[in-house]
Length: 115
Image 1 (cartoon, one colour):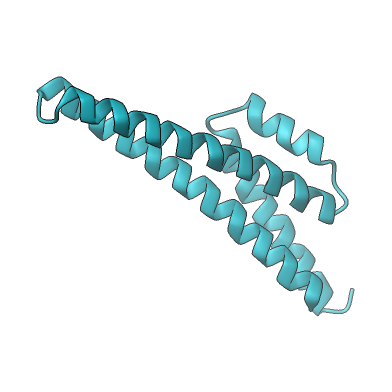
Image 2: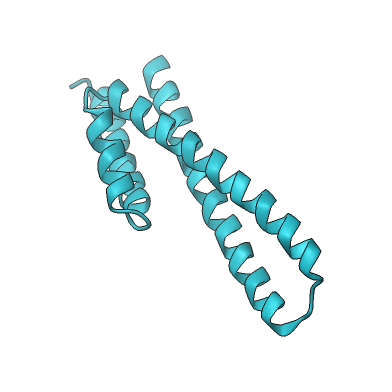
């Protein structure tokens, strides 16, 4: 039960870091369109872009560490999971998350079934 809880916490953290990164990216795209239309001051856009890039960077680092930690907890190679996620970016992290979620759910189901 304790292991299941730890796996679910790490999986939740993985999901949060991925979702926050994509939300920030979407906001940056919207701000870029706003810049082209002249709706928002250039200085405000510059500061917003810097803050959003920092958030994306931090969330990316957290995603990598949580992905590697989860892989290690499930007796898989964290380096392989991280490497494939980075090499195949921007789609790779989404695929890695969905595959890791399936592995965690399978592991929890097997543990609950006594196998």
